[in-house]
Length: 182
Image (cartoon, rainbow, N blue to C red; front, side, top):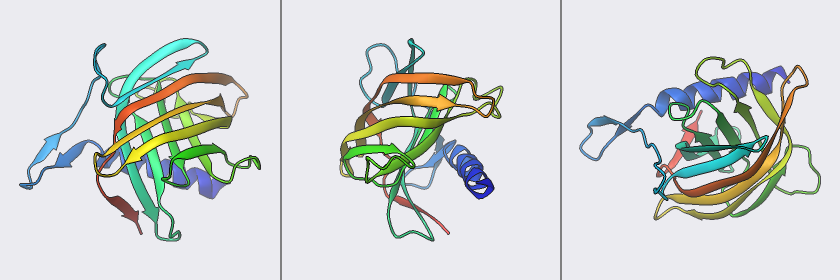
């Protein structure tokens, strides 16, 4: 269990640090920060937390592969700079379909992740998905977009919980390529 927590925290740190900049074709590093406006339909992620709407964007949506696993996985992290209520999930595949929470025998594919009520000021107050589903409707590696829906219940170590409902990813910007972690 401690190993999973260490891997998750390390993964979040690596994703957070690597997501702050982007290198363009000429090798120039540029900041990337997409803030969805009310009319934008690209890279938008919305969900409700106990019926309160959260509208944000994808901070990191990327395919990755661990050195110990030959299978590609998918990470989706919402923009913690745009909205303090942040989600971070990892799916154990990159194919369209429905993924259930780890340990749910009804699903062949699984996901795990966390919800942070205030990512910027209290990173230690994280809520892990106890139940739920994450459905990838479309993943297009040529257009670099992901579309999907999600919902579930998240719980922290104190036993407090939130209900995540009506989650949607609309034209989420998928980072090109596959990141390999050795």
